[in-house]
Length: 168
Image (cartoon, rainbow, N blue to C red; front, side):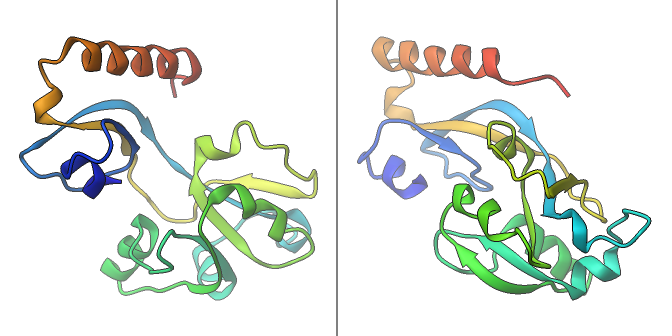
């Protein structure tokens, strides 16, 4: 989406954009964290998912392009670790349904799970290693910075998000 904003193909994009060019403006809408989702029956008796188990088990990756270039994999690589991606899906909404009766782990943005009807056999846990919080933003090309109608749209998005985001 970033390229489409930069090229003027779309006026506003919401998401996570780790790097921006100088011709694209942004506003942070909220800070996000990660959670792990897995079948509770595959946890050890103590109910703890440790780092060793996390790395050994197969994972579902959410990636539009199928590459292992996301935040989780980048952090693991920086520490000399690697997780095994068994399944890659292009959107997070499909991933939880693949976990039931498997040893797969899904690591996703916590808020993506809030309005999802989850199977009661699934459990949501904190990752067994530190993943820094990250900003969820709206971005637009700078040519819209002084456009009143675009400013109105950005403000509407900001207000909607403010009413739906819980403060952590």
